[in-house]
Amino acid sequence: MLCLCFQGLKLSRKRKKTLPRELLAELPPGRAGPRRSRPAQPGLGEAPAAKKNKIKMVEAWYMDESQEDQRAPHRLQPNRAVSLEQLRRLGVTYRKLDADNYETDPCLKEIRKAENYSWMDIITIHKDKLPNYEEKIKTFYEEHLHLDDEIRYILDGSGYFDVRDKDDKWIRISMEKGDMITLPAGIYHRFTLDENNYVKAMRLFVGEPVWTAYNRPADDFPARKQYMKFLTGEAQ
Ligand SMILES: [Fe+2]
Image (cartoon, rainbow, N blue to C red; front, side, top):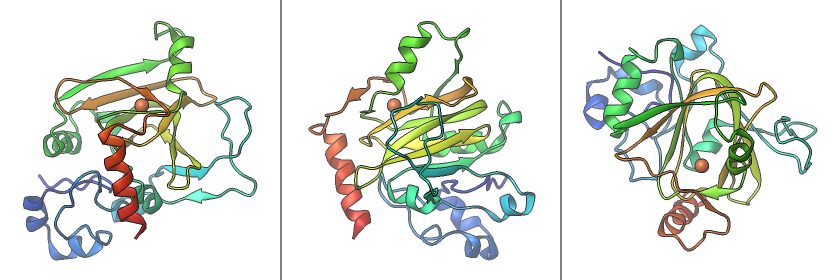
């Protein structure tokens, strides 16, 4: 079955070869070409199917400097929106999937196979569901990086992933049901619930999971250096 999900789906080279010409033509620039080495990601954007069905895609914006409640939106006035293309240049991949049918969704199956996301579990972040809730909420919001990609698929509820841009400014990504995001190894980021105080998310991993978070500063790790190299390449 041909699975296009709602881009950016990563298409394997083999799959690209089998795509009809008209679908290839509709892919964002770079999608029809050979796959780039990680952490560069294929293009992102709203797929024709998403436009047609008016499916809500992810929204992102630059944050204000306020230290008030981390769960507030923290938009600038006026709002400074961030596009999927801007996120892609930071190595952040976004996909829209069918969260109502995640257990049988062929798109999810295909993504897991293509990306080798062999491991997964489901985490619920809510004061009544997560042990050491308050402590965990604080930890998630500490600016940190990982030595592996962080992959999250929102099955219910909502929350914010914040990532640093190339000028070290915070971008807030509003994640809702059906949103899947991959944060590349080495990117500084953090997570918080929003004002709904609830999220249920699938965590995916290549092989046995390693959840170690390295709080900033963590600039000496090879994963960070490689990510900085990627950013420099994207800026040229
Ligand atoms: Fe993280």
